[in-house]
Amino acid sequence: MSIVITGNPGVGKHTITHKIAEMMKLSIVDINEVARDSGLFEQNDDTNDVDVEELEKILKQKISDKDIVVGHLAPYVLRKNQIKIMIVLRRSPYDLIPVYNDRKYSERKIRENTGSEILGVIANDAINRLQEKVFQINVSGKTISEVTKNVMRVIMENEGSEEVDWLELVRKNNDLGKFFVD
Ligand SMILES: Nc1ncnc2c1ncn2[C@@H]1O[C@H](COP(=O)(O)OP(=O)(O)O)[C@@H](O)[C@H]1O
Ligand SMILES: [Mg+2]
Image 1 (cartoon, rainbow, N blue to C red):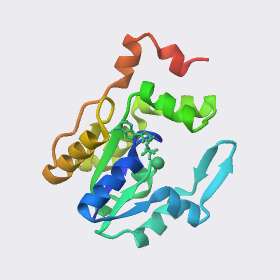
Image 2: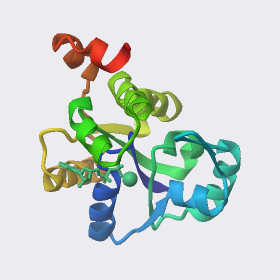
Image 3: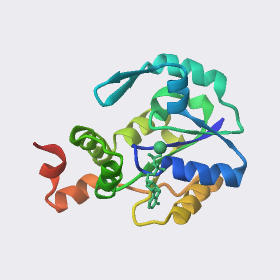
């Protein structure tokens, strides 16, 4: 069973995965890389559609206990019996916007991804499929080394999941229109 790091684009998955892999002497399996190398991505405008059933089959052969698995598709392409623990990194939508601007995402892609983070789509889907194996860590306001420490603690102690509610924050700031309405 593997340690899995997931969350929306830009939350810091790859940054944190590299730190944890180094500390725990694990090798990294990047789900997007596997999908790309297997020719499973279909390019549509600026979104990538992927054959999740096929990806699930391929990953079943690829993953061992010595791997840490990273990718935003993790909750949709891994079986519960492959997962030791799944950590969903959560990052404020206000912190994601500059990351997406740096990546030159389109307005539409920014909306989709901040919207998904605000609603907690990946976290909710993960919890629905994998229940007690899922832990959330809020990365906003923390340094990379603080996040790494929190993630390590969750892995070692199986506790320390954080409550995250960006919707409440966005509502309080009167920014629902900024993120959800044209
Ligand atoms: N805890 C953090 N605090 C500040 N910046 C961070 C943190 N974690 C990651 N970053 C930065 O955020 C950006 C996105 O990180 P990355 O690891 O590429 O995310 P992902 O793999 O989820 O898309 C990078 O520029 C990275 O250096
Ligand atoms: Mg990444």
